[in-house]
Amino acid sequence: MPGSDSLRSIRPYDGTLLWQGAAASEAEVAAAVARARAAQPGWFSAGLEARLAVVRAFKAAVEAEADSFARLIAEETGKPLWEAKTEVGSVAAKVEISVQAHAERTGSREAPFKADPAGATQALRHKPHGVLAVLGPYNFPAHLPNGHIVPALIAGNALLFKPSELTPAVGAFMAGLWAKAGLPQGVLELVQGAGHTGRALAAAETDGLLFTGSAPTGAALARQFAETPHRMLALEMGGNNPLVVWDLDEAHLEAAALIVAQSAFLSAGQRCTCARRLIVQDGAHDKLLDAVLALADGLLIDQPFADPQPFMGCVVSNQAADGLLARAGAIHGKTIRPLLRLREGLPFLTPGIVDVTGLSVPDEELFGPFLQLVRVSSFDEAIAAANATRFGLSAALLGGDRALYERFWMGSRAGVVNWNRPTNGAASNAPFGGVGLSGNHRPSAYYAADYCAWPVASVEADVPFIARPPGAAAPKTIGVR
Image (cartoon, rainbow, N blue to C red; front, side, top):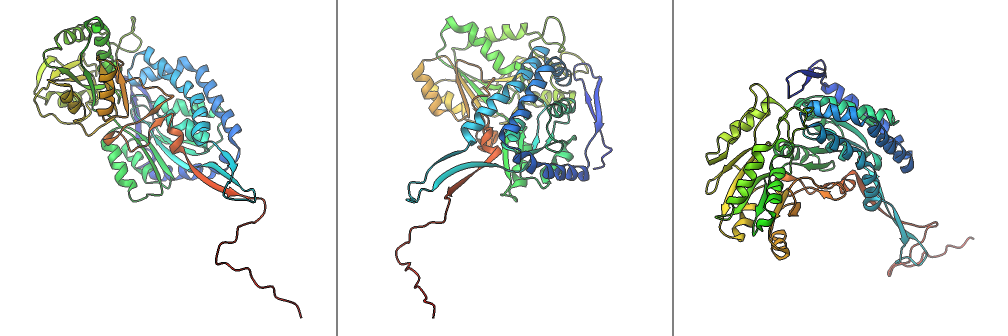
């Protein structure tokens, strides 16, 4: 893995070169880990208030560079500028949310130790793991790795950050903002590269790894980390998410259709929480489907800076588009709306919908604007169909009353369960994570504080004291002759 390996980032919407640089070699990865290891004790010992000052300076730097930041995200991912601006806003908002979460979930507290008559104190404090690696995804190249980075730095860790090889420019820009905020050298080491760099970083002498990405990569990391149980591993992976529509009042048909379209096609379907399966009551779905199709036909699909602003842009690369078209084409259901390439040689895709009722289809995350329709006859069958997946990230119910929703909530198997709202668009001030192939019970967002520090329980007294237990006789006094 020579350090001179070239890394290139292409604007997906027009195929032009945006950024290029060198991928880190194994030796460079090891050197970056060593620098982080050397810097971490000073960062932790500086104290919480000093760390918070730097983190808040980062927020100010993000807000000062918001326009340039959003434009770069839009250029590198192909997402609409309005959506990139929303992502930058989430990066800034993550700071105070993380400050609050750190205090609430991993703060310090002291109380009298009731079992000790001598007045000892029982204390709970948290320590950072030390040096953590962060592997970021391409769909939210700033917001999602930032969701690991901010709470990890607040806790006192040093970090190795490898952005997705598809979005290295955004990673480099964000690392530059941390430098502007006054983060000491070595506390955040940027490591650029593709899969071989990620594997080298995962194998390096770190204290843990925070990952957001696909289930196959997450499973590979879990196998690798099985040999090092002393290292912390947090996996945030994808989903084959169900959206169930049941007992829907026709008065809410338009809103429901918009929720379906947003759930399935927002970000060109490149959100881990996007709905992949629409589960409906057989014979009662035609009007909803007609409304969804009418919406899909009218969705604007264009490059990020088009005027008027599009609803969705392209997927991240031609390779991603080719893979999605091939996998969707292998599903031989009834095509309701074809998934098509909109522009030759570029990864713009039209929203696709296929009826797969009664078919055995692969249980996989099709990461793009592609929705599978499943018709069932009872609500029990709807819940069973929703749970017929190895994933368990997001699920939602449209329609019904509170009792039906509670039945859905109790029966569904997902870490995010919504009612009359889209499957996507989770809140940063709540935990975010799933079960099964969607994660390893390390939810992120508000609960990221939990995996960025570990608890230390203490009983403390100013002088030595212990009550003499039964059977431990007092020592005999030896006289002096």
